[in-house]
Every structure is written in C-alpha cells, then in structure tokens.
Length: 446
Image 1 (cartoon, rainbow, N blue to C red):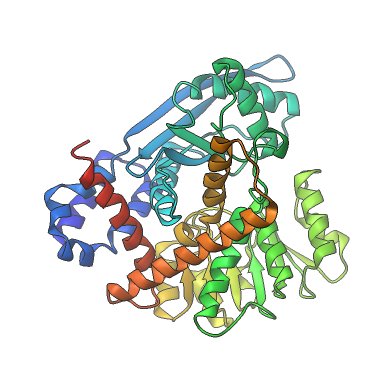
Image 2 (cartoon, rainbow, N blue to C red):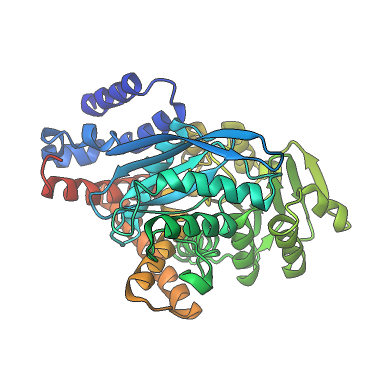
C-alpha cells in the first residue's frame, strides 16, 4: 500500500542510521493495510505520520565519579513516544549498546504493548550506555543519582513512570527512587519495580516471565494442549528467563537451557527447582557467568558462543535481547520440531525468522503481546500506589493471569476479524494500533 510505504520512506529519511527503529516500525506498518482499507479516516488524519514520531526525546550527559576518583561520562536517554491512552510507561535499560535507535524501537514497541494490557498506559523507554557489570554498589549509586538528577525533570506519577529493564534491577531502582524523592521532596509512585517495603508490588519481579508462560498456556488451550511434558529452551539467564523457567517447571514442562552473552548451558536432564535456585544465586547475587552452571551439575554442557536454538525442543522462549533468533536459527528450530515460539524479550526474532515461523505453521507469540506481563503488573503497582494499598500475591497473580488471557483473546479475535486466524502478529499489531489510533483521533491534532 503506497501510504504505508510512503511513511516507511519518511521514517528512513528522518531517522538515518537507526536500524532497530526502522525494523520495529516496518514490523507494525506491514500488518496495517487491511486496517487502512477499512478505515480511510486514519489516512486522512495522517495517523501513521504522527504515530511514528515521538512526542518527546531527551538526550543528556551523565557525569559520575568512579571508585578511583576518576570522572566518567555516559549518555542518558528518555523517549516519550505516545501518551494517547495514558502516561508514558516503559523501562530504563543500562547497557553498553544503548543508543537512540534502540531507545526509539523499544519505546515504539511499548506503545502497542501497553495498549494491549487493558490498562491506561502510554509508551516510553529510556536508559544509558552505562554498564553496571563489574561496578561496585557505590559506583552504581553515584551513576544512578546523576542520571536521576536530569531525568527527574521529565517524569512524574501522572506524566511518565519508568521501570526496570536490562541492567536495571531492584538495586538500581532503589538508588533512582531515593534520588527522585530527595530532589522532589515527595514520595510518589514515579517508578515501578520498587522494593516491597517502599511501594513495590508482589509478583512484579516475576511478571514478565510468568506472563509469557501464561500467554503460551492460552495458545495451547485453544488447541486442546498444555505445556506439561513439553521440552522448552530458554535464552538469557536474567529476570525474565529465570521466572519463565520457574513457571514452566511449576506447570510440568521440561526446561533444558539458559544462556548469557558468552554462551549456552544445556542440561538434557532438565532444570529443576534446585538447579534454578542455583542460577538465581549465580546471576542475582554473585553476578557470575552461565558456564558455571555446566561446571556445577554433572551431565550439563556448556556451548561457548552459541545460542540455544540448535537444541531440540517443542517450545522456545527467547528471553534475552533483540534480534537473537536469525533466519538460520528459525530454520533449525523448525527442523528440530519446535511448535511454539513465545517471545519474552523485545523483538528477539529478526523479520526473516518471523517469516520462517509463519510459513511453517509455528505458533508464534510476538513480544508486544507475550511479554506484556511486566508492564501490566507495573500498571497494577501504579494502581496500588495511587490507592496507598498493597494487594496479596494471589490477587496480583490472578489479575496478571486475567490480563494475559485478555491479551490473547483480543489478539486472536482481531486476527480472525481481519482474515488471518491464528496469526498473533497481525492480531496483536492491529488490535493495539486501533486502540491508540482511535484515542489520537478523539484528542485532535496534537
């Protein structure tokens, strides 16, 4: 369709050298032709041109002092992409590869992910090219305080509510929150992922991983199947991967892998609760490498420099980072009998990999739907903060289950309505787009 093609060309010209952002925009716009055919008013209002342009993008310097007394300088970002259905909501990522392109891609994805959650949340994302690995607690604190000194100008409980992401866990959220409170002299729900004793929500650490598994569970239920007994590969070994494994083990699935940036640990015997506890201690406390898992447990093997997609499995849960499944990886998964790919990370499959999945009838649950559990419980944390209450673990978990069930139902129904039954890519993108586009139409040219 010439309209979407023209918008894609505009994005390329306006945003040179931003491949991740271009990929995210293309992935969404390529599914919208039937929507534009049915709703020409979107084209007349130039909704797409407005949708691909962030409402605000802030880049700032973050100076801090290391333990040797040497000044260091990093770059900070916050991209507030769209607030049509609520305050900006999205994580902060501290990682050396953070760039404006990655921030814009994540913020753009977040707009649609948040629209699917049923909660009134807009989309944003932020972070820094700071690497917390190998830094002392004191260095991380000094960096976070400097970062928040600037970020505090742009966020607030009714404006923009950041959360954690890669490299930003409870430690970092604590330092960031403390500095915000100090600067603004107010105790508000300006960040989510907080400690339970100071405004956090139960189930928040588990939410992305649990939600991904709940989504997969809903997919299988529509086909009269379950996760019980299925062999599952998981990439990553951080928060999302850990709690994906925890929920899969609880439901009777057999998890056989974890990975990190150096390689993959493969355990054909299966990862049980004891082995998972070791991974959590290894990664969350000692901040070690996943190769130590293979050294600890007899029968496990470590594959240096490899991802887990060559391991024979029935379900794959990519839970590490963007573009971690290539077309070649996808073909290997298909060849080895994989029937479901459920994305715990943001855009972990390349466009060519997605084509392979869809062409071969693999049940493919894309990230903006499958990993929305994290932001959903962040939204629930915001609700608890606003009411000054704390819900029980069971209540939050049930709300998460209900939200993931609703996301699945909405994506499934929309896919069928637009002539693509079972295609969660089309269903998720179209359902989210219509919700955001209608809100933008209602609010005028802003």
